[in-house]
Length: 184
Image (cartoon, rainbow, N blue to C red; front, side, top):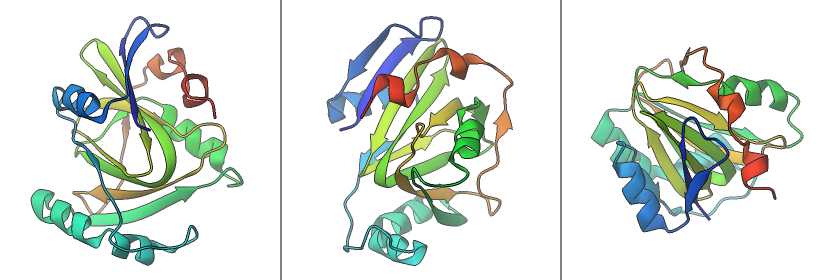
């Protein structure tokens, strides 16, 4: 189940949680974030390759491509046994921005996006079926947890794909992690 926790950016120990999709969507719309739920148009196995996953969501991807002129689409997958899971987690945990907006759709698993907007931090737990877009130049970070288990479709408006500009802020380290907020 998707969950949104809204914090004052100076009070990471106190947040207000929402678990109703309509409320989460409304809260995120207020900061320009698109949040949707999708279903596959075809079934595929858990170990499906990139082409199979993209084919299963082709209609929705085509709609987004035409709406936003996306130039590249890929699938990223991490499991608890991935040899570079610690390095990947650290890379995404650092607060950063992108020149273009990013869209992620969770095919499997879960992850926690933190959006730092004005004086608030919006922690969005995304799970299978959730699509989130982070507006361009929005400071944010992502926690996949100590034992990541997710598969996401990523869409980009540039051919370069994921290019981050790190802010140098240590704010991400002051907020509860995915594992702290939502232990499995």
